[in-house]
Amino acid sequence: MIKRFILTLLAWLGVVITREDAKGITWFFSCRKGGWIPVYPIAGGAPGGDSDTASLSDSLPVVIQSARQVREDIGQDFISTVDRKTLPMGQGRNWNEIDLARISAQAVPEKSELNNPQQLVDTLLSIEATRIGVHLVITAEAAHYVATNVAAQWGTLMQNAIRRYIDRLGLNLYDGATVTGGGTTTTLSSGVVAAMVAQIQGDTDESALETEQVYAFVHSFQLYDVRTEVTGGVATYPLPAGLTAEAFAKGSRVIREIGGAQVHLDNNVRIDATPDGHGGVHAKSGVVFVQVAGKKRAWTETPGNRGG
Image 1 (tube, rainbow, N blue to C red):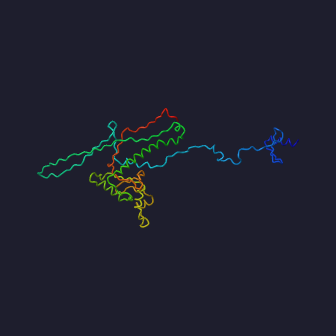
Image 2 (image 1 turned 90 degrees about the horizontal axis):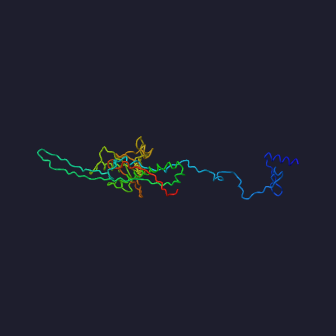
Image 3 (image 1 turned 180 degrees about the horizontal axis):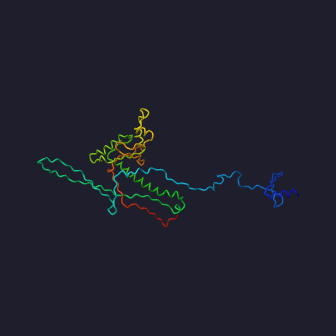
């Protein structure tokens, strides 16, 4: 009787009392029943062991802590190196510009007669502006549920696409150039760039003014070849301070001018299957870029018959 009283008191105090009989059955003392109750294992119960992230995987939250855009080269602002024009609203779709051919002067000696009229000849340059756009379809469900830090990247992503398109539009003009420097499978050298500058400044049909800025746009692969040319004497000759030492230490980015051309490293320059880089050299007045005033616009549509 005293033993049962002690067991009941311990059970009330929260002490778990168990025993195992000769048959291997575990018994649990219940103060409510006032006696021993057999405990049988239940098939399919919770597994034993530590509770870790694997066992609680369904309870782990999925949170988008940050969002970033895939790194890209949106260009080196090709249009900043060209002759930019603005077509006012209400003046038609085309920018029309007249080029007047040169005329000749002559000496008029004493007692001679100036009777050699020069004919004025014009050539029309007509450029039609083309709209550039980006189209996204975001369902109402997506706009509602997508993480806000992800949605915040969409606007910049669209602007980058437009800037990259305009940059490549300008770079593609090099494919239609009348004079080619270097040639396919030819490694770019400083001499090729310098020769193109000389061609632009000394062209017999129409040359750039000596005071006019000339630009060279090249891919990083091409500029690396020029850097190799600059650092070719390393380990053979002393390396004093100067362009060679800077190019050896800091890479191609220190090469900012070649043969009178301001160098722009632009990885939007097309690389074909050969592989050849389609970079080029141009004078500021050699390319005309027309932008229509007041043409930018953005709009959002919400179709009423589209689910989600």
